[in-house]
Image (cartoon, rainbow, N blue to C red; front, side):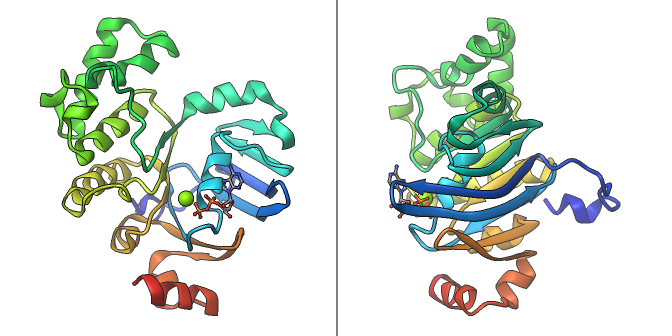
Length: 259
Ligand code: ADP
Ligand code: MG
């Protein structure tokens, strides 16, 4: 959280972990992302806000190759994705470096909590079963649900399931974490426990891109807030600037509706 302000100035030549260059994305005739230029530095926490349908999910889904794009380039964790899904080898590498947490937790319903967390490390990273189980318990402890390890997802509350999803993503030791409205499907009383786990992760220096409508949380953890309107980055800046002194009329009217 605000890591860039705590440490000395980041090196001028620090390589961004994400670099989008004039990225354009269409769904058929719908132009969803328009000339997006975006650099994200290691350790940065970026919150993406904007109206429903503005392209927030599509933007972060492009970052881990869940969506192809038609124009531009995208470097993620040192690998380059090209338009139309070219650069397929990069994709595999990127998927192991980038974790994602979705609005719907997407846990494997037939696997215990522990097995949800160990599956990818064992099958993708080749971690030994025992080592993966130890690491799973450490991760579940970190998100405060080690006592749920032997249960199945359906036996957990939404807030607990989302924390399992977070532990599962972290088990791959990602360099970058993407969150797409991680608390939007939760009952209000469970939002806090998920935001707390994310806050802790930010404090530990994880690089994070978070789509959320939780503006208080955004103000607190973001190094930078990006406002997207109809597929374009209209405005971005530190939270105090974006929330307290937005420069654009569109940002102001969006914030007036959500704050
Ligand atoms: P947000 O996350 O900001 O609500 P999305 O990125 O999900 O917005 O969607 C941006 C636009 O792209 C919307 O108009 C949406 O309907 C459209 N869209 C999203 N996914 C698809 C898809 N798979 N096929 C066609 N259109 C899509
Ligand atoms: Mg969305």
